[in-house]
Image (cartoon, rainbow, N blue to C red):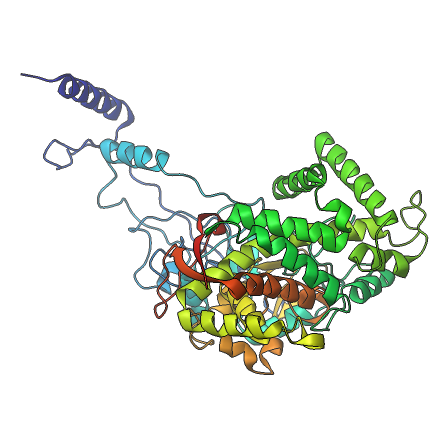
Length: 545
C-alpha cells in the first residue's frame, strides 16, 4: 500500500528529473549513482595577473589571493576579512597554504553536483539561521591568516574579498607598530567603523560615534576628554562617587539567583546615566530608549542617517544638554562643563559641546555589560581565580584611598578583552601612496589589522587560547604591541582606565557576597576556549557566600 508521503515523493522526483532534462544537469538515481548526461563543459576559470612594476620603481601590489572560507575546527579567533570567495573542493589545491593560491584554469569537474544534491543543499541552507553581519564588515578564520603568513613570510598580504574589496592585511608585529604610530594624514578611518565601548573608535566627520575618539578631533576636544576621563590614572579623581553608584546599581545584578545579559544591561546603563549625567537621569527610560535606537541605527548606517534617526538623535541631544546644565561636580558631564566653559550652540565650530561628549560617553558604556558577563563567566569556569578575585574584592572595602585599584580583577577584565575583544579588527585607509615592505600601494588602500588574531596567535602568544590573567601583571604587558584591547599610540582610548575601574568594580560587587556556582555555556578550564562567546547566551547561577 502506498502512503501519501510516498506518492508525494515520487511526484517530486518526477519534477526534478523533468527539470534536469531541461537544464542539462545529471540526476542521481535511487541507488545514489549519477546518470550520465551530456551537459555543457565547465568554463575554465581565468588566471589572476599580477601588476607589472615600472622601471626603476618598487613593484606594484599584486591583487592577492582570495581568502578561504572560515575554518570550523580551528580554535583561533575569527577576525575580519569579509565574505571569502566560494571555491569547491575540486578547485582548491591541497594544503593550508595552497588553499590561498590564486585560481588556475581547470577542465570539467570530475563529478558535477546533481539536481537532488543541489536541492538538498538549498533546503539545508534555508533551515539555518543566517549570521548577523555589520555593513562593511570583514571576516576570516585564524587558519586563513596563518596560511597567509606562512606564504608571505610575515610581509603584509594583499587579499581580495568575495565582494571585490582589496585589503592589505598586517601579519607581523613590526607592521602593527607602524599602524598605530601613523598619523591620520597617512592612515585614516574612512569610512568610519562602529566601535562600541572599551575599545578604540575613530569618529566620522561629525564626530558622532559611540566610542573613544582619535586623530581628527580638535586639540581642545582631546584635551577635555583626557582631563575629564583622567586618561592614564588607574583611579579616577571622582572614584568615590562613581564606586558608590556602582555599589548601589550592582544590587540589581544579584537580586535573583541568576544573572543574564538583560539584567546586566539594566544595571550598567542606570549606573552609566548616573555617572555621566547625575542621579536624576537614572530613571529616564525615554532617554535610554533613544540611545538604544541610536546604537541600532549606527549598526545599519550606510550613507547617512534616516529622517527618523535624525529625529531621535536631536531629541537625545536636547535631553542630554538639559541634564548637563544641572550636572553636579562629581559627574563626568559636570567636569566637562567646567572644562569647556560657555558654549555657543548656534555655532558648530564655536567650541566643544559637553552635551555631545556626554552622549558619546553614554554610548561608550554599551560594551561594559558584555565584558562584565564574559569576565564573570570565565571566573566561574576557573574556581581558583574566582576565589582570589573574591578575596581581593572583600579586602578592597577597607582599602581607603586605594579603593578602586583592584589589580587582580582588572587583569581578569583585560584577559577577557584579549580573548573576546569588543572590536576584533581595525581598518584604516591610506590617504596617499604608501610603501609597505618595498611594495607601493595607491591611495585608498584599506589596511586591516586583525587585532583578535594577533591577541590569540599561538605562534606568538603563550597560552593564547587559555584564560591566564596573570600575564597582565607583567609591567610591560600594557605596552605589548600584540595586545590591543584599548589600542596604542595616538588612537589609545582616553577612557581605558575609567572603563577598567567601573567593570572591575561591578565584578567585585558580585563576587563580594556571591559565588558563581553554575555557568552556561560550560567552559573547559584547561582546554582551548571557544572562538566566540555571545553574551546573549550566557547565564550565571549565583549562590550566597
